[in-house]
Image (cartoon, rainbow, N blue to C red; front, side):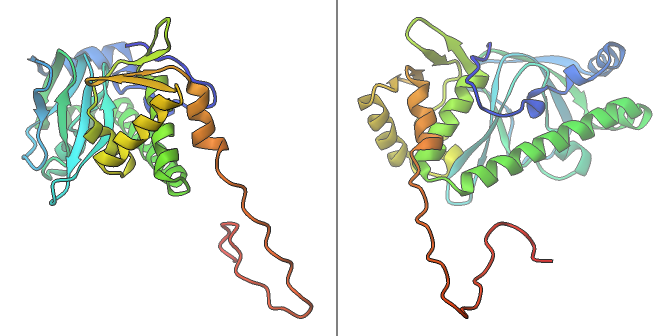
Amino acid sequence: MSGAYVPGDGGLEDRVPFLARLEHDDRSRLLGLGRELRFAPRIELLHQNEPSSYVLFIVHGWTKVTASAANGYEALLALRGPGDIIGESAALTGRPRSATVTALEPVRAVAVPRELFKEFLSSSTGVSFALLGLTSDRTRAADRRRLEFASMSVRERFAALLLDLARTHGRRTDEGIELAVPLSKQELAGSVGASREMVQRLLKELRERGAVSTGRRALLIRRPDILRRIAREERPEPEPRPAPGPGAEPGPDHRGGSGL
């Protein structure tokens, strides 16, 4: 799946997969420790809360990473594809897996036993630093996304999500940008902290504006410029605060500084 670039969407450091960060010899030795597995679409590769016994390296195909709350609400956390590593956190900490990973299309992956993976990291400083760099990039990207989303309405977050999916998982067609990952309305809702009904209303609005067209697990972005306006330009300007009168005490500083 080749990404269709949408201008103005930020850096791509967290998009560089783990295997692409390794030297050729390290990559070959690491994959040589495991065995290849194949998964059909919609089959789970890893399951939330299960114990960890191996790490997976995706060789071909795309997957979705989801997590479920106790009340049944499911959130889409990430999409992982060729070159990505999954299950490493549970393998390193010994804790149960924190999310479920499901194939979106036919997937080939290499499973490396947990203990062999840990031994390999202990003997290879370069690979250990590559994994640390990947973790840092993903954390920074997640923090940046949380910060951006905190200042947005659900409508704005949904437009930003569609732009991000278009950039990373879009295919150019004569009619627009087709999202190449089959995501349900519930999965889209979980990604922006909304209900399925809210996403249905937002998609209806976008269809009426000519921004998108939809089918069963299919979405075509016809007017990314409309999505950009919704995500970044249609927010009302804040009303200016009146100047304090003579002798008034200064109010709290909301510019983000610590005040120290």
